[in-house]
Image 1 (cartoon, rainbow, N blue to C red):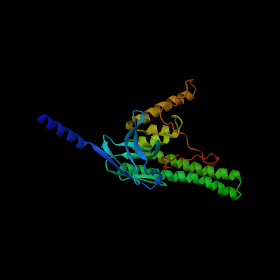
Image 2 (cartoon, rainbow, N blue to C red):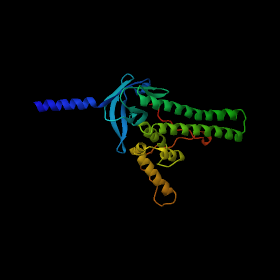
Image 3 (tube, one colour):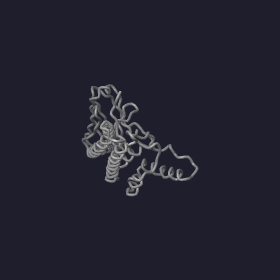
Image 4 (cartoon, rainbow, N blue to C red):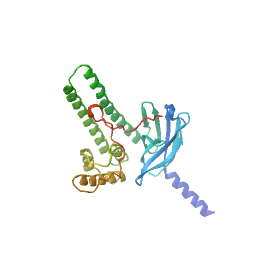
Length: 265
């Protein structure tokens, strides 16, 4: 009996020491009602389910124990909707026609301030297509249009690179750094090296470099770079970043890739 009581006390103490996450969500997208939502995260090289729930009358809720803070993604069926940092505190998710948002805890607040700024740059890039059409209607010659819009696109791209790079640098030692690194590299068909990635890795801390996704991506990208520079072995397309590249804007102006989707049915 004493042994049983002792074991019960130990279990209770261990449970009380474990942190937990609590996600309260609401959706004004009617098509989501009755849908099954999943929290998924990368673990041991694969996307694995952490939790699931149903959307009932526009409301949903996740809760559970947390062994460490982690970056997860909210899925509806097989479609990734948005990133969510699972950390202690009351995490509030809102999903509307214009897009999803998360707040209520420090890392989620920081992440979505970054995402809002990133979305502003995406909108600026998308506006260049409308601007191009307007300039054509005004009779401006094509060469002038191309020069002006390409210059503006280059400025937006540079601003986006700077925003992403500084955010990752500021978050090397928490889950946001590797999480956003995963988001930006997912636009490539297979792992590649870019000047931005090389710069990020040159400044990175040990904790960032040792993140499983970052480590695997960078190693594979280096191997692919060597192969593309003359070795006969095929390029490795099996490791991270399987998502397709973003669709070019008019006249091949490159649009920064959105970091999340608005659910649609």
